[in-house]
Image 1 (cartoon, rainbow, N blue to C red):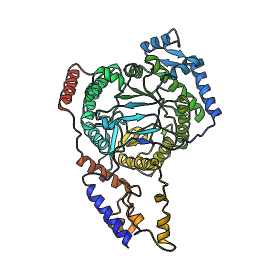
Image 2: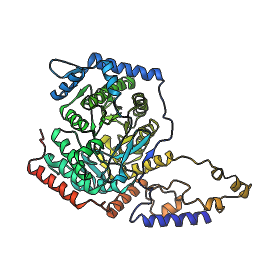
Image 3: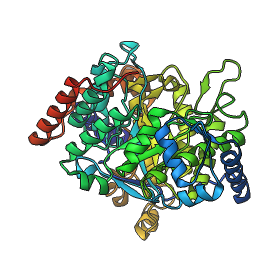
Image 4: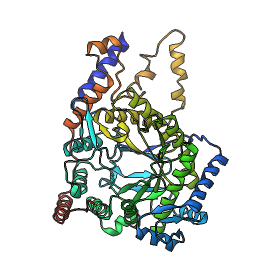
Length: 513
């Protein structure tokens, strides 16, 4: 048939090119044009908000760092004599939230990679922090530096990945005291996209802030005006912020860098078993963290992170990509819009393999993130096994999912040409549109082009080896790593970074206790 011949030949040309690189849309900022889904009424959202304020007023939250307690006390919070438990008047919380910017730009070392947050913009990050790595050829293994580098190469090569978050996999073969130095230098060399640092103690985050400044070739004054680094802060749920994370907020917010406050509330374990109760706790913890950033520095950029899911009540294992996870994501978006701050969600699943379960759980929560109005999808590509494993195949599968979402966000044309009345008139009853001028003028760009899906008929697919999506993803990952090209980095900046890292390694890096 003419249609099959033309399509197959076009697909073969794309496959040939994929030996060097994928036929993928260019790197671009995504913007969500849709009205967010509102699962609860305004009164129900207000009920969660007020319940969260009651938790903050009556129960309070532990802030375990004495320096944080001093900042909170100076701002008017009620700090217990032992300096740990902090209670907040609701007026103080609401006043603090007013200074949070509703939008900001996160700057990369390559200005073409700068990202806007707020205003319905959507940014997709890599998987972050699994201790293990897997692929279908070598199996599951400890995180290591070589695989860490390969994930960075994938993140740089895939245009749908806007930023790298944490370590795509922990390079456990690098000493903990210097891991942040070595891994950050490597990340700056292998990618030119925005990145994050770990708030695991004061020294680590200060080192990474300085390396972000050097990477951009700017001074401290400009760094204060242009956020150039992000860091994730997890509340130690229930109702506690630990010392390393609080140092992260203090050092990052005081320098106008981006903090994502993300309570890790698993309903039935670290939070109430009801979704509404878990969201009340999530919101209380998030508001306390958001307010604290503004007590450190009013106007500092901060993101509200929603990460409420549930556990399997038979085993106690975390479950992700569940209906409850999706509901919490949508309701979290409603709460965030009430406060007028940027919103972070995640692409997560609990599967132990890059299989159908991994995909349907990821799709469940990714749809909720998009329709909930998220500005950042954390763990956008590569998460597996409840976050314990970074999967190379899942990275590619997720890239397809995220590209499909990006295509879904593109506006639909409804011009007279799009309505195609004249084309319908030309074809008339009983004809076909394969060879009409209207089709031939548009066929190359009319529809989404997958990087992973195989749309051939069964016979052609079978003759070509019956390769399923997981094995195709493995081949694509291998091709991308092989074809990777390192982005340029100014030699003077490289030398300054290397000198800084060498000095800090000689000094012993960061404490590990």
